[in-house]
Every structure is written in C-alpha cells, then in structure tokens.
Image (cartoon, rainbow, N blue to C red; front, side, top):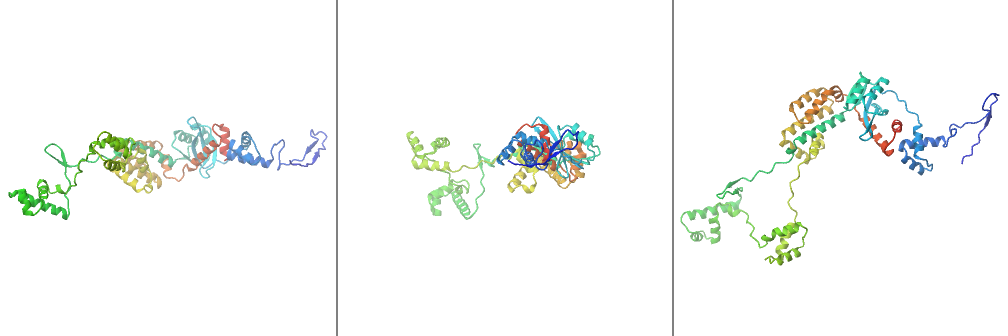
Length: 457
C-alpha cells in the first residue's frame, strides 16, 4: 500500500466549472489507472516479448499477476512506429493461416527492420503502398509474379532484384527433376557373367588364371613328365617305377587334363549332414538356434548325424552373412551432391557421385551446368547469364532447360540479383521472427494484433 500526500488547488475564477483539483504525478501514475506508469512499461515489454498466455505466466512469477488480454491490450495501446521510407525495400510473404491466408512483410534492406505489413500477397496492396511512399530505389523480392507486377506498377523506376537464395532453391528443384528422369542410371549395372568355355554337355566352365610360383612350376613339370612317359608307351605302374613316385601321385597327374587341376582347391567332401542343411537353415531363420534341440529333431527322424556336425554347421550360420550390395543412392541424395559445394562432400560421396556421373552422360552435363551457375551466383557474374541459358537450352535436359527458359521472363531482376550485393536475407530473418510471434499467440490471431506485434518487435 502506497500512502501519497498531494496538494489540493482551488481555482480563483468564479465561472470555472472545476473549483478544486489535485496535484498530478505523471511520472508515477495516470488518472483512473490500475497500474503505475513503471509497471505499465514492464507489462508492455512482457507483452511484446511473450504475447498473451506465456506473458501471463511470467508476470505471475514476477508477483504482478495479470491476464493475457490485459497484456494484449497494453500492446494494442502502444502507438505505431513511423519509420521513414527506405531506399532499399525487401518484400516477402508469410502465412497468417498456413495454406489459407497469406500476408506481405516489408523491410528496410539496410537496417533489416520491419517497415509495414500488408494484409494480402497480391500486387494491388504493394503497388498502393509504393505509390504512397515514393523514394524506393531498389526492391528485393522473390520471383513471385504478383510482387513483380506490384513493384512495376507502384515504383516503375525502381530496380527489382531477384533473391539469390530463391534462385539457388529453384535450380535445386530443377536438378531434382533431372535426376528423377534418369533414376535408372543411379543403380550400378549387374556384374558381367564369368567368362568361360562351353563344354560338350553345354555347361560353361570357368577359366581360372594360371597359378604362379615355384610350387606351380614343379607341378607343371611333373604333369609334363608323367604325360610324356605315358605318350612313349609306359604304363602307369612303369611310370611309377621309372620316376620313383607313388602310384596315387602318378594317377593324379595322369587323370588331370590340365596341369592346373591338381593346384585347384579341394572341393568339400560330401557330408552326411548335406541332405539336412536346408532344414537347419529354415529352422535357424525361424529363430531356433539351440544346437541340442536341432540335433534332437534330426535324430528323431533317424538322421545319421552327430552333435558335432550340427554344432559346426550352426556356427557357420551364426557368422555374419556377406553384406548385400549397398542400395543405389536416392534422387534427393544425388541432388544434394550436385547442388552442394564440392568442398563439403566427403571422399565416399565424391566417389559415389563420380560413379553416377560416369554411368549417365546427361547427369554429367547437368553437373557442369550447376557448377557454372554456382560460379555466376558466387562471383556475381550476371552478365554471363544469357550465355548460360543458351547452353542449358541446347542440352535439352529435363527440369534444367525449363528453369533456364523461365529465367527469361524475369531476366532483368535475375541479372540484377546475380550482379548487385542486395538480397532478401534481412527479409527472411523478419519472416522467421514473425513465425516466432505466431507461435507465441497460440494459433489464430487477428491481423491487427499480429501487425502491431510485428511492427513493435
């Protein structure tokens, strides 16, 4: 409780309707006010920062509980700022209700402050605003046709600048269309069949590379000696006595048509478990991995197998199977590789992109066009844009050709965007701040309140 002593004044004029009045304290409070002036300023700042419900929760923690509508009324009671007409104007849209209602935010390209908010994103309100605010020299915008028309009608002498971010975003969509049209080329071709010779029964026999080394030379010489003696008329036992070798060794070389046959890996011998391996594989895939149980199931069927056989084969199934070939890269991933700076790609991504481009000449041409456009955008080489458009038009690539020809409809603004340093970066930042304000309002909010909060932020 504040006890305040004030002075009382009496008017000496006889015909004055107010004979007495109290001394005012403007720095402390106002007539009929429920809050002091200082508390009112605090509520205004809380309302601007957190809007309704969130501001009410904070004010309750600060020991001056107020309702959300009180905070919003304090905000609505603030006077609108009166900024001067900017020389560089940024124009962009934002959703007041996503997918249904959109508005336009105007910002100063030099200070990045919000200048005004228009209720729609049509050309009429923008043209009317520009007509009533002469002095705008440069208009930074996206490539929406309504904003281009509104800028042309409201400020015909102003230079329109297309935003570089939206240009790169547009070429990204075009590249994605081009990559999707060549989706079949993203997967690696199947490995070629093993070369071989056709045998008499029509089967193809694989030709293995000739072994090398001392052991191979000894085997080759021994195979030649055995077949030379057999060709001279020696019998196999006579060849055994002549060479001093065992009969099995001579028989192994005599039966081998090629000297490489004895060097080949020994084929696995048939096992009594072979007929039951498919059954074990099915049971293992179904989740049964207990060796004792599997062995008991086989012995119940009178299978001539031992516990050690089953355990050894289950151990091989438990081992990690060979990894399947990696899936082909998706369209969006390849698009990201093509539109990102090469320095940001890892070695694996470089190798994968190189492999994709080697299989598809069209994508390789698209990658070259994207690199050239990136050079134009980065180094502000807007004067070379017509030559780039002609080159893309000649290549007739899906997506990219349409994007390049569409630039001709707005060529002056695109050329200015690729030449001047002005952009819509500050306007995009204002749109992000507006989204934050909308989240604070918890859904629907009137345009007047949203307009007030945007201007006073």
